[in-house]
Length: 111
Image 1 (cartoon, rainbow, N blue to C red):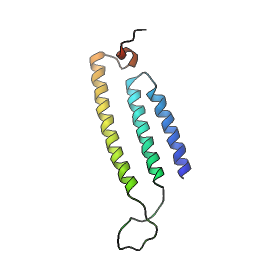
Image 2: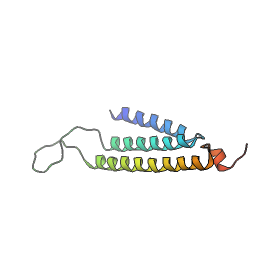
Image 3: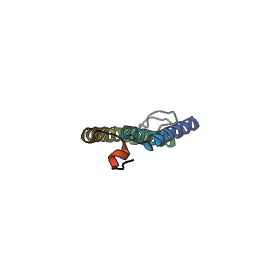
């Protein structure tokens, strides 16, 4: 299962990199968000995809799941959505101000 997750992470990183290298501002933001989610999947995979019960004291269970990777991923997902929302608002404001979302025109390169 971990091998499948790593392949999925590679595919998501590839898609995100392709989108980040484009000229449209919205694609760049979506690419950064996809890369962020791929990193979250990589972190949860590195924590181990094992099944077990909750790590509670008093119960005599030998196989339990570590809750720290899940807590870190939940925090990272919330931060990723907040940053994506902020950047989308900034992109919309830049589009309203300049009338374009092309990075070369925003940079001022006339070609």
